[in-house]
Length: 80
Picture 1: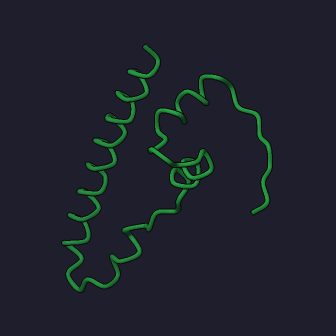
Picture 2: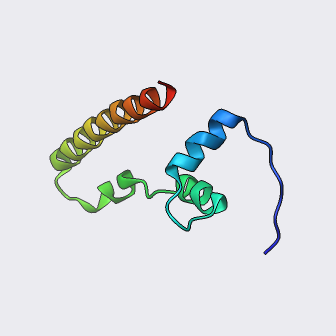
């Protein structure tokens, strides 16, 4: 497999190292973090009852907010 060298700051290296699973390469960590996730809104059109689509969207937005808050807490704990 071909490879490329990149330069990252020490703080980013430390954060990646903490995210690295045992026996996982740094390429594996970066690939896992960049993996494209499915857009749940692609499936909304399959519902005949559009009221449920609104509930689904509301649930997704709440989940995003919870995830954003948890991510913020994790990052703040790394910085301390």
